[in-house]
Length: 95
Ligand SMILES: [Zn+2]
Image (cartoon, rainbow, N blue to C red; front, side):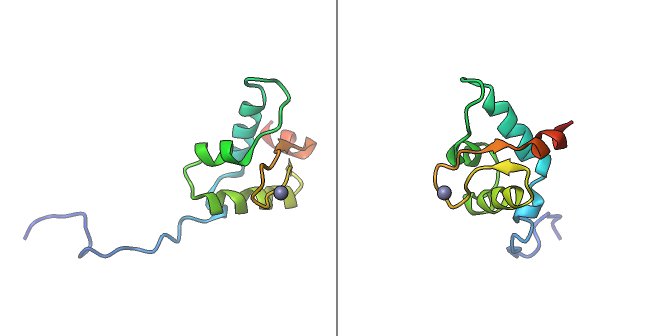
C-alpha cells in the first residue's frame, strides 16, 4: 500500500477558520504598521486588512468587530471602508 498524506480523499470542514483563530496581535500590529505608511496617522481601510490577512473577508470582519467591541480598535466593521485605528488600549496591547 502506498503511503499518502491524504485521508481517503476526505475534505475536512475548515473549523479552524474563525475570527478567534486570528491572533489579536497580528491585526493590531498590521494596523499600526499600515498607519505610518505612506501617510503617518491615517486610518486603515477594510480592504487593506483583508488583502494582508490570510483569512476570508467574512472572518476578518468578525475579528475587527470583536476588537472594536473589546475597545482595542476604533472603526466600523459593517463592511464599509472601516477607518480603523488603534485605541489607547489597542496601543497598550502592543507593548
Ligand atoms: Zn460601516
